[in-house]
Amino acid sequence: MLRSQTFWSVCMIFLCLSLGASRAESQQKNTRESFEILREQLIKNVLVPNGIKDPRVLKSLGETPRHAFVPKNFAKDAYLDIAIPIGEAQTISSPYTVALMTQTLDPQPTDKVLEIGTGSGYQAAILSPLVQDVYTIEIVQDLGQHTKQLLADMNYTNVHCLIGDGFKGWPEHAPFDKIIVTCSPEKVPEPLVDQLKEGGLMIVPIGERYQQMLFAMRKVDGKLEREALQPILFVPMTGAAEDARLVKADPRNPKLINGDFELPLINNSRIPGWYYQFGCASVQDPNSINGVQVIEFRSTDHKSPSMLLQGLAIDGSVVRKINLGGWIETENVQLGRTKENKENREQSPAIAIQFFDANRSKLGYNYIGGFSGTRKWKKEERILPVPPATKEVIVSIGLFGATGVARFDGIFIEAVK
Image 1 (cartoon, rainbow, N blue to C red):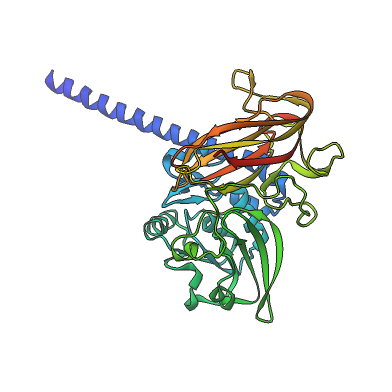
Image 2: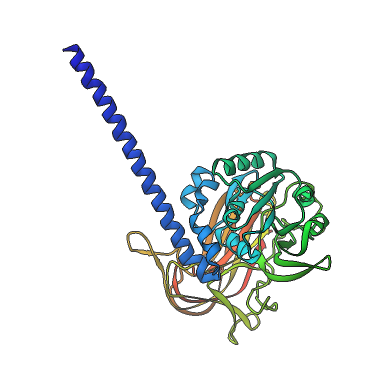
């Protein structure tokens, strides 16, 4: 009898283990399928409508598991088009930024590419199936070690990692067909110019800490010929390169650039001082309060991204309150919906602000919005508290999931003394 009980006990243990393994495998399969669906939605709703057309780039974005390159607690957000903190005051770039830079780089199967700023390894992973070799450099020791191991574990065998100063390049493997820089120097470091092959292409954001321009640069007769693409924002560089900036932000006196939208457009469409230009355009409105140019958002799809952003420095230990505002006009606006199919006031035309600390962790969010229907130009403003640990903020305008038409002008932020 004892033997029989023992036998059945052992059988039950194996059955439970088998059922547990089966459930785990089923959960893993469901998770993989969910991530695949999210990647498909990202491509359909964000990347393609905003100019990412190269089928090779879209294929790589569709097959690369971005959730593996972010901390586990951010995995659920991996396929939102946002930057995500990865530690060491660094972030993984948004999928659109990675797709834009990759497409502009025009990767070819025989290319040898140098990447400056490995970060999470996601950009290198996207490039891996598109080129012959990727040589990538990360200056932050712990981050570099983690990413090097991650890329090896995921079998990206043609990605080669180095921990060191990326602005010195990797001379023993030069010259490179292409160079992609995912941090923002004030000017292109000379070693990178020297290590780029004649006729080679470099994609690099250049500019001040919060005012950067993405450039495509072609090496012709030993010098770089540059083409401005669009405004963009990357996280601070690390160490001496960031400290040595000639033009520094003023975190005690935050001011928006081109808040009245009157500066000439870049490439006939891009709005100076602002980035992440989704679902909007600069248009003329003789009825506007601040000049002639205003920003107009139009959307018929609640899922389509609709926003315009600008980053700036704020020292929350000094600036305790801010006044945020601007002018808004709407036409036939319908708010977004909650899961229970109720109106969602957060999915509305709004002037919004996000607060971040020194590690780029999000401290808070606030907005001036909730507007629906049709209304003429009206000034909206609010005095908002600033979390004491704040070091930078992102100011954004847009429809944020609403449909209809919304126009913005005279957007401002100022410290309340």
